[in-house]
Length: 207
Image 1 (spheres, one colour):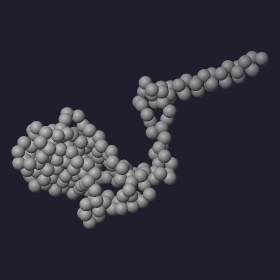
Image 2 (cartoon, helix red, strand yellow):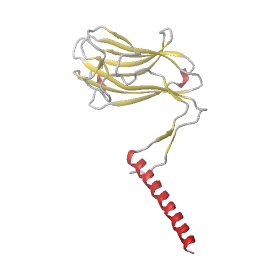
Image 3 (cartoon, one colour):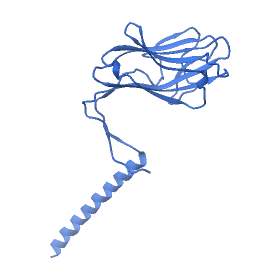
Image 4 (cartoon, one colour):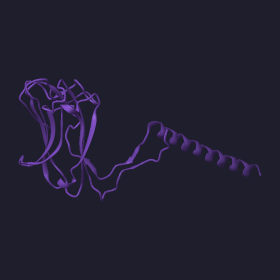
């Protein structure tokens, strides 16, 4: 009888310990937020989209200044900083090979500071060209009229260009008076295979 009771108590303790460990694990996950358990079928195509260095980018400017600056970064230490002076003609470009039959998504953050009074003469654009540099599409365009104090995010679907080699080009131009600062940061071009195992997350309880 004592032996049976001892075995039962031991099994009970093991069961309680397992429950405690499970609860502790759930609480730890809730504390840190969503945790990706697996990633499959996606790849990042852009080099240095965090704008920390110029590596991977073709840089063009008519001014004597750097296009990557720690003046105003959204994350990390630097962001792409275009224009900021009168008569600026700045550009950053990168050539990418988009894999065929993939879902391709472009995401980036932008911010505009200006001395203009909503003239619209100073502008930032994001353009797509083919491998030879021939324009394919204007993806995004804003002017000093969109100036503000908060970073804005833009998402663009590039899936129709999957299987092609393209050039992604960021351009900024300003007129002769009242300069505008254009900032771009945290840019990604992600290609995901829809037939691969997708991402999934551990189920969480909202805090």
